[in-house]
Image (tube, rainbow, N blue to C red):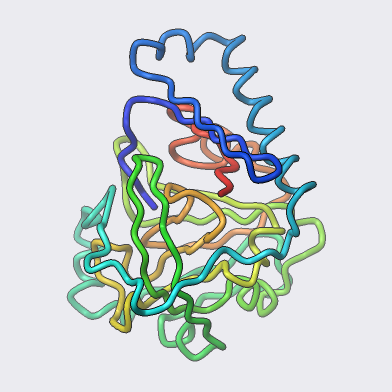
Length: 256
């Protein structure tokens, strides 16, 4: 999600079911910017990712809930309405002309309409969204598994990451996020167009958003208009794999 993050870092390390959260308050921000500290934090991220991959089944599902567990209100965060005439025109037309381009290391580049997306095999799941700001909400999402889209495009074996290009601009750049191929092909990773049996509201990312259920909320890109298969994240933004990762050094792998 294109979230406005608090001026602090949270490093969440998990191993063997133990969860330790280390908040870095604003008074420590200067220390966190030091190259040596950044290196240590980066090492922590790699250990977090490695420990999860070693200790957890790569195909393990995030917990799913029942309709009685649904939050009465699914709070939007970050961008609630992308700026610009182009998005406004798409919204006014019900996103009938919105296209999702699938490019990069694929055998068959695609340009999918929302009708194309809805015509593909769908998955509905009720999951909990955990925001780095400290709040959670449970919602029912319907969408096409990302793996189905990648299979239709014929993603090449040389692709290691999937980059999600978004229509919302924050400050000086358009929002983007990324994940590796393991999470891209996870059965609960979907491109969602509906929330709680209704078409996705604009504030929650219409017409299409990523649901990356085993990662924190800032990884769940909204307003997706491009899906790109790449071999490396170098040369994309600042090379760290996401808008907030580039700017305030949030962890690229935000597993939960």
